[in-house]
Length: 184
Image 1: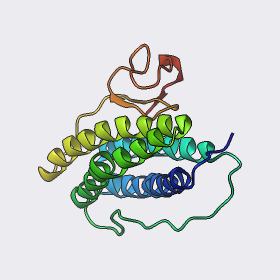
Image 2: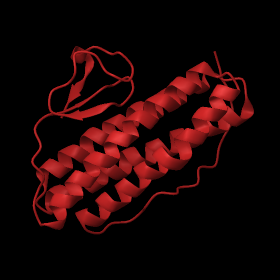
Image 3: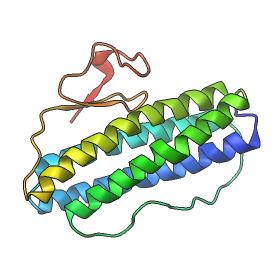
Image 4: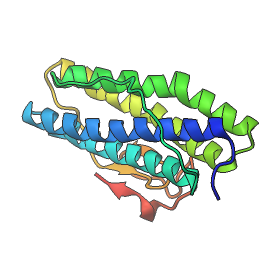
């Protein structure tokens, strides 16, 4: 079933575009981090890139068979530089989604009774909060010229919930079982 309301459909398309760009940007920045001597920060970028893919996938699927194009304005950082700068761009992008974008998209989906879009926006919002924190921890170490200490990173393929360390038995955001988590 496709989303019914134009505004929610536009927000889904916009979120899909933003998450897709974040996915690619993080993969590129991860490769650059590795070249700079930060293999764990690379893994963090890869894990969160996968979470962004999960968000984009959810948004795309919620559009269903609804046709229409969308111009996506990229509000995020483009370009290359040092890993510390890339991490700041990632932090800024995640915080924009947490503080500006997803709260608005979520409220509109609720108002328009678009349950699937509401779920997709909620999943992304909760994961982005964690991503901003993880990127900040990585940046704190990179500023010291050090790679972050990082064990396994687990990402829920359903909602993008991301945890450094052991995966929970059940995802606290969507309820997916531990066995479904992807490990980085």
